[in-house]
Length: 119
Image 1 (cartoon, rainbow, N blue to C red):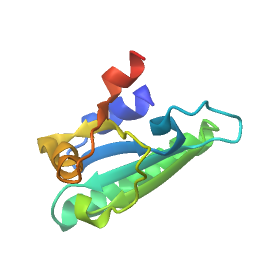
Image 2 (image 1 turned 180 degrees about the horizontal axis):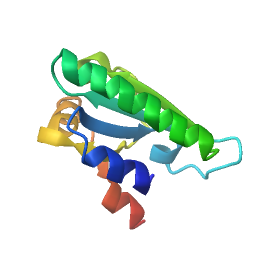
Image 3 (image 1 turned 30 degrees about the horizontal axis):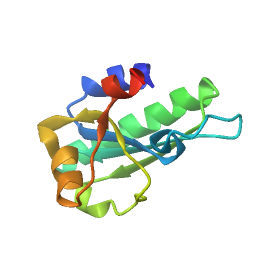
């Protein structure tokens, strides 16, 4: 996850990267588990196209590494309705604070990757 975070942070077409699912619920990682990752693209058609390419690249890297990745791409946070009350999303990237703002409006908290790794 750290390598993915490093690659994505330098990419301007992705505004936010959020990890949900078992990882955000502190469930133990099993051989059948996957990582549920959500990309939020930057604004504009060009950023959406670039974000699609980045998503394909990340899925290919995960596949070749035999890393179980479930990745979804949204054009904005408002399109994303997929969260559970028992999840504290782990945020890998949050350009402009869009994830913090969106989750804050829903009364939810987030965890930054750096804080998650300290657990």
